[in-house]
Length: 111
Image 1 (cartoon, rainbow, N blue to C red):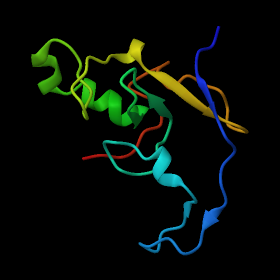
Image 2 (image 1 turned 60 degrees about the vertical axis):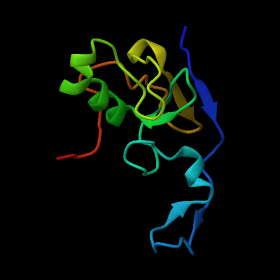
Image 3 (image 1 turned 45 degrees about the vertical axis):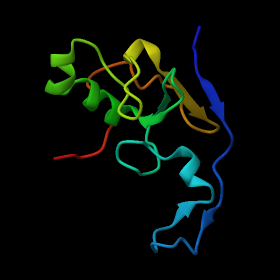
Image 4 (image 1 turned 90 degrees about the vertical axis):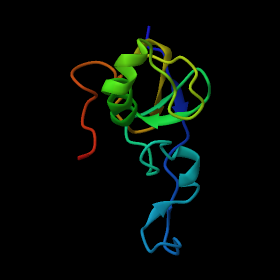
C-alpha cells in the first residue's frame, strides 16, 4: 500500500517571474525549506513542512543531527525521520517513493 499525497497537475510557467527565472505559477507553495527552490522529489513532514527529499535526507544525515541522536525538522526542530515523511506525487510523474534506494535519489549537486 503506497502512502502519499497527490498534487495537482503542474501549473503553467510564469514568464514574468521577478528574478527572471521561469517558475510554475504558485511555485512558492512547493518550495523546499532547505534550498528554497521548487522541491525535487517533494516530501511533507508530520509537522507540516515541505522539503526536497535529497535536502531533507542530507540534513538528517549530517554530523550535527547524528550528535543529537534523533532527527529534527530544519524549520521547527520537531522530531522527524525518513519513516515520518509523506512523499507528494504529481500527475504524470512516476509514483516512486523517493525514500527508497540510496542516499535520496537524484538530488541536487550540493557542495
